[in-house]
Amino acid sequence: MSPELISILVLVVVFVIATTRSVNMGALAFAAAFGVGTLVADLDADGIFAGFPGDLFVVLVGVTYLFAIARANGTTDWLVHAAVRLVRGRVALIPWVMFALTGALTAIGAVSPAAVAIVAPVALSFATRYSISPLLMGTMVVHGAQAGGFSPISIYGSIVNGIVEREKLPGSEIGLFLASLVANLLIAAVLFAVLGGRKLWARGAVTPEGDGAPGKTGTGTTGSDTGTGTGTGTSAGTGGTAPTAVAVRSDRETGGAEGTGVRLTPARVATLVALVALVVAVLGFDLDAGLTAVTLAVVLSTAWPDDSRRAVGEIAWSTVLLICGVLTYVGVLEEMGTITWAGEGVGGIGVPLLAAVLLCYIGAIVSAFASSVGIMGALIPLAVPFLAQGEIGAVGMVAALAVSATVVDVSPFSTNGALVLAAAPDVDRDRFFRQLMVYGGIVVAAVPALAWLVLVVPGFG
Image (cartoon, rainbow, N blue to C red; front, side, top):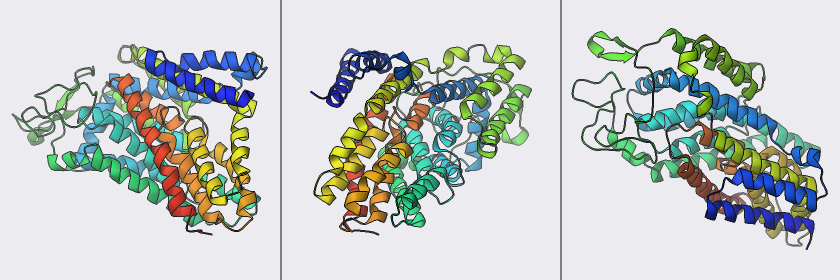
């Protein structure tokens, strides 16, 4: 049995054990990386640790640390309150606002994980407060980021168009952008309909918490409606607006005829400034999101230790272990050449259309665990030989690879999916992880075939 096949079978065993024995998959993956790397790939410790995602580790820790402080001092409450007022109480519009916001950030040049790191914590805090499915809100954020991710001035778009130019393939910058935009928009529409969007529309306009008239709940509903969210920790009879596990300061101010509102205390103002500083630092100065978030969190902790005392304990450590372990094992696979081995095997198939769909599936499967742009950089050159035969359109093939390799970023093992999982407050994290994993599996199974059918089979380009 070849070393590459052994490494793939070990990965399957890791998934089976983690699923059936409830062992943290990251810990299993670290053990697998050690065993396969040492016994099969003849790697030393440095070679194994070369795949450890140090940058993602810092991003996960830094962002969850900063937003744990924001939750503790009530800043996220204030942001949620402001968002409801911005859309005039139409809670159903908020998922689309988050979709558009992350799409705009990536379209103008933000790296997709940076945009998700900025938007996801606020979006998921809103989902918790108003009993929106965290799966709906999280996937809307990720798909929004990918919707704008291939604009001609975006990071992903610039990289892929550069690869196409280097390989001397025909390309279409606008076609690539529109393919990703339309694909993610359609997926988002389906998710909105399936995961409770219609009930959100039926709920109508709500009153932000603290602004309601006497006798009304924070969402303007009465009775035992608990909304459509899963695992949010809401209790019946509250309209799904007050998570029982949230512990924030209750500073309020009188708002005259409009009732009461969440007050901007000095700690909250400083936290809002920190969040704006994070956006400016990442988007304006291209600073690392994780290191910037850690630095800002430390400044806030030093100034207001009482509000942030519990923040370190609320960092999503189990998620950090999970993601870092799995990605370290994927790094061992890359070091062994397993991914290249699989891609070259597909590229050697004599039937161009079959090779095209298999490359789309390899891009989707590998990208669910590794760098989306990295896998495209590897697969596009592998497609050159059969693209040269003229039976497959280069523009459609590149667009299909781009869509297949990025829509799967909802997987909890990808950077964006991991950020969503880590940012979700007051949810059953194991259940949310399973939901993201199942949804990611559905996307991996369905989207490459659909992208191939729509973009490759007609022969665009």
